[in-house]
Image (cartoon, rainbow, N blue to C red):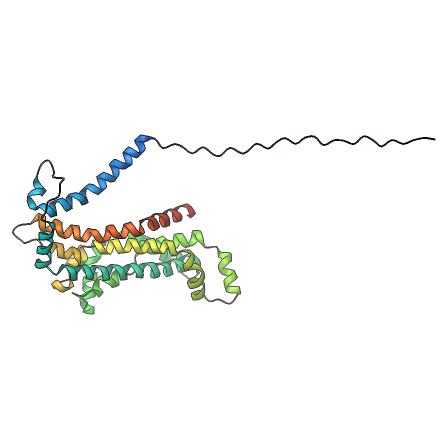
Length: 297
């Protein structure tokens, strides 16, 4: 009688404990980096602060050496004189209306044109886009005379339409949005939308524009700042004080004989405050929108 013995069972080898992966070491920021950033921030802030100091002291502080860094107590007096010399509140309102309309117009119309150049096929598209890019190399001052003639024929001289309409679309804005749409929206997504029965307008409004809305918001903010700071074209086309923008109102504070630097600095500081508020609320969105487009492009 033979007995069978079971073969010896193999014992599983003990598993080695998995070592936790090392986290990538984050470079430590040195103290001199903070020092350089602090000095750069102070260098950017000091002109605005010095503007406030001069507007609170008077014209004597503008030529004082070393520069005065302690504000005075005459700011409200000079500010009252600014409002008495020119209709400054009206000028600020005009600047806000013009800049806001230009910002909205550039954000929407440049997105629409950029979508057409990026995702639509039509005859002469590449040649037309090349001409558009070449217009960016032409100085804007060369277009002032024909632009003024057009505004004169339309009867828009000394009106806000003469400022708003030419600024609703820009070559840089179309180029910006075209590049961003090309990098962020795939052709397969648009083809799928067309297969579902959507037309070109529905595709742009429901698919393309929501995707590129951050880039359009950045473009609108840049257009707002440029329109707010514009001086040359409003100075040429606006005649009456009620139509002045903020930059022209600052020019109106100066007489032909002498310049009251304290008065001019008070008006300049008042014009700068809205931009500081704008960057305080939307600065992070502007930087993130620019960096988002840079990484995706």
